[in-house]
Length: 178
Image 1: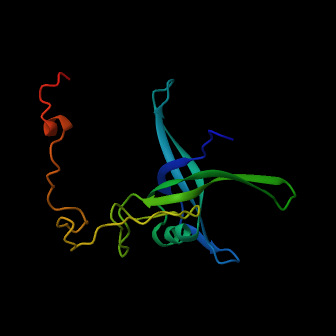
Image 2: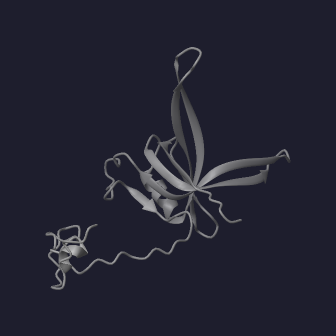
Image 3: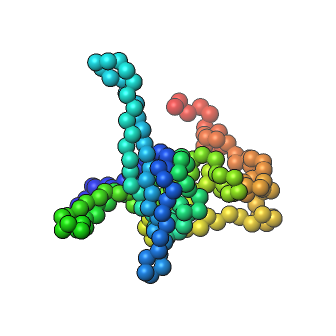
């Protein structure tokens, strides 16, 4: 079906410590819940009403390892992924359903707990939900003479003179009426 999209992005708090387990083939899987809340003012009473929605989240492989190592109850997280509904039969023979978010990307948005080293821009792990082939970012060598001097982030320390901003300045077209 063309033109469809299954994408979920939520920001909320982890409801309980994630449960990490392993499949028979050795793949890590983490299950946890995230609470999102919203508030509104009741029209009849004028009172503020808070509403909490709970979301089941499942993460696989390296993403699951990250979740198990860095997330615990109360952490503020951003979860990106897709919605998926599973069906199974309960002990009573009745069909049961659950809808969950299969996480592609989980980022911790608050300070990492003591003893855990956050990564730049927050602590995060990406790419656990689906197999992904991401090209490595190539950065020029630090001391290569073909490149300007770089700071610790690998960016040039000084701006280069790239010439005039507009082609008309370079070609002497100062009298063009537009």
